[in-house]
Image 1 (cartoon, rainbow, N blue to C red):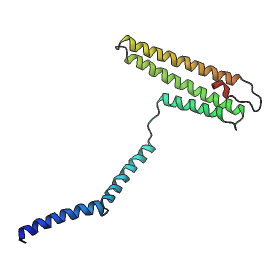
Image 2 (image 1 turned 180 degrees about the vertical axis):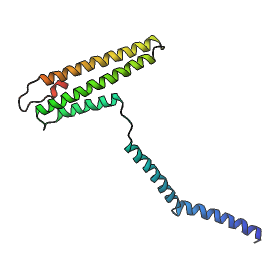
Image 3 (image 1 turned 45 degrees about the horizontal axis):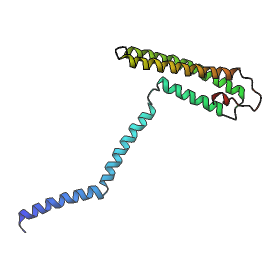
Image 4 (image 1 turned 90 degrees about the horizontal axis):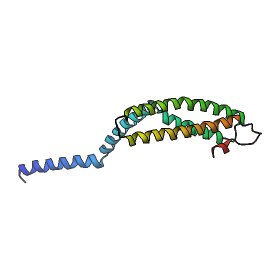
Length: 157
């Protein structure tokens, strides 16, 4: 073998050995571990600084909390009524924020076709109708005088 062939063979052998070591020798795992550790740190930073919830998300969460309160069989009726009253106040404050969003949306769509504006108005009307019905149900629950062992849940079925 000539010197020229030895140098080519040596270079090819070195490259093959490098890639073999990288793939099967564990170096690839070290690189993966370093990358996943970096991603894990960024994910934990996101957990520490969660994004601010939008009013409609808070509204949905409050409704789910109300459903949970009504489904709770351990808590007495007076405690449930107190919790529901607090949640009702929370819904009213969130309702103001949501109505402000509706107003902002209406300002943004003022240059769009009438059909789109009408859809928005229809949606706002439906929202207000549903909210009024929901508030009426909550008022009925507050006014209800229940005996021991009865449930408040039937108002929402």
